[in-house]
Length: 268
Image 1 (tube, rainbow, N blue to C red):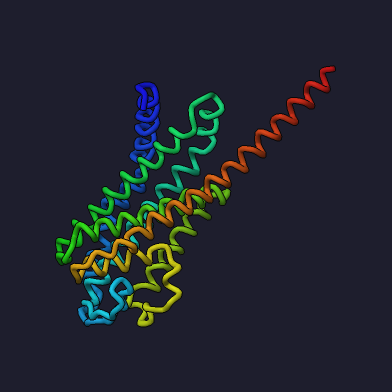
Image 2 (tube, helix red, strand yellow):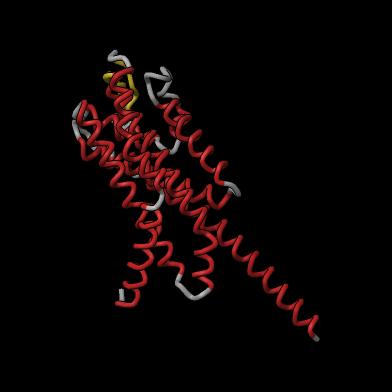
């Protein structure tokens, strides 16, 4: 990477990170919602043992209901926050990014900057969630639990970007992210859903995260395939968003071109 290219990337990445830091609601959710949610799980959910079908090892494991609910609660928290952050930032900055690109700022650097901001937010928020969990219970593999949570955050960050491309209002996007996360975790938590081993859950965005998270919490296995499912969801969602933005931009440019030609014809 040349010095000029590096400067462009660093500048775009700095502004992308500042956009997130200016989102006071998201920062407040990180600071207060994550520990509040996990603490409520610790105080309210029963200690009874439940069965969980761990497809990563092909066996049903008996897990502590309160502990597995801490994992699902952490997943719920990080997906809500990161999905919300990426939706808001992408939704509000689309017009400005288009003006920058039209003025000659390379699109790849704008995209790389947003991915850097998303990755940074996912890693930091997931690390914070694991740290809070460790105040009440230390999983077998805290680092792998962190990686699993980061995968879920990336998946919902990508979904947030996709929803920003699809929807026309902020309220609709926030509602969709909240409902997706609640449904996802409600179906996968064995305490809330005794049939959490249903085949349907394999098609949920955080399925890989729960599989890897439960393995990290109670076993010493490393289900690499399941850890990668979150990033796969992220790539798929971002690809859809890029296609939608491409179509919207092309239609807008085509409309501007027609308007220009109409003006020229009128002036003649």
